[in-house]
Length: 88
Image 1: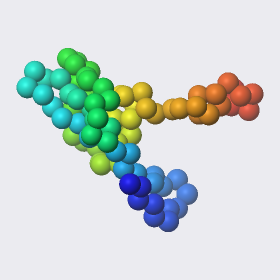
Image 2: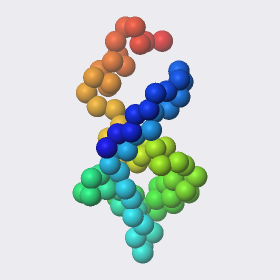
Image 3: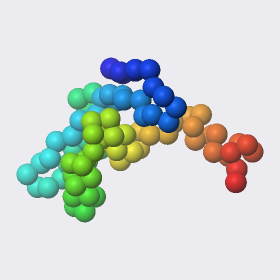
C-alpha cells in the first residue's frame, strides 16, 4: 500500500513497502516482507538496527528495513550507476 500526497520539491514521499520486524528472545531480529522472512539480523547488527529503528518514523523505518534486506536497489538502478552521465 502506497500513500502518495502532493509534495513540494525535496519532500519525502511516505510509502509502506510491506516490511515489519520482530525481536526474538536471543537478541536477533527477523525482518519480514509481506509476512515472509526476508532477513535475520544477529549480534551487533541487530542491536544497531533496533537502536536506529526506534528513532525513525514509519516510512524511514521501511527504507531502513529495505536496505538491511538488500531489497533496496534493483535492476535499472544498479545498471545506471555505471552510465557515463552518472560517473564522477
